Length: 231
Image 1 (tube, rainbow, N blue to C red):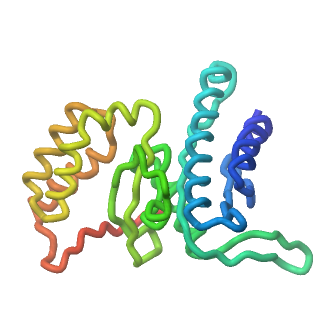
Image 2 (cartoon, helix red, strand yellow; image 1 turned 60 degrees about the horizontal axis):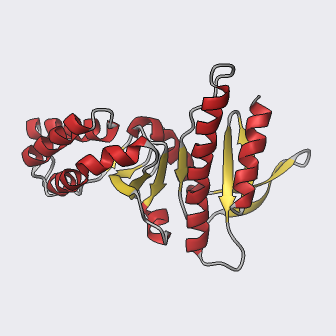
Image 3 (cartoon, rainbow, N blue to C red; image 1 turned 120 degrees about the vertical axis):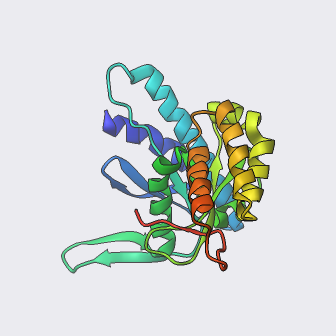
């Protein structure tokens, strides 16, 4: 079943101009570097693929869910420079890509579970996108093992779109209050949003942070960055 699953996903990725670098268990690392096109095209292609892949998984879940354990996938997208070439020993080499861009993408994929998101993208990718529809700001973080921060965003799909439409205005106001260090006002709005969208994990995270900062205010030089200490 897993081979059949990968075969279908490979088709979606290839049609969007992506190249599968490697499979890692039930995961795949994909490169988008469309020739003779601006970086925005590669960013849009990567995001379009992510949405199509989630659609494919949804279809598989409806068709095969009772017979096979269909994986629930999280997708992380980051844009930047990589080192590409043959890596390995004299006995065996793999043609692959390495570098901070690759590592950050992997961290974002891992964070989809933390934020309860199906698709996360970095601020670097978000800035390149031509189509920014149905995307919300999620956090300002330094991923595990890195000191350089990045803003992260969530591509909203399925019921996420309907849920966010109920809270969008209050959510944006709450985020603004939070980064201005008005934590009481921010927490009140996040709680209001939570009543309308109880499954939204991002709201839970910000409510917890607001409580912590109200009990122990941040240092005077606080810049809003959250340093994550887990992969």
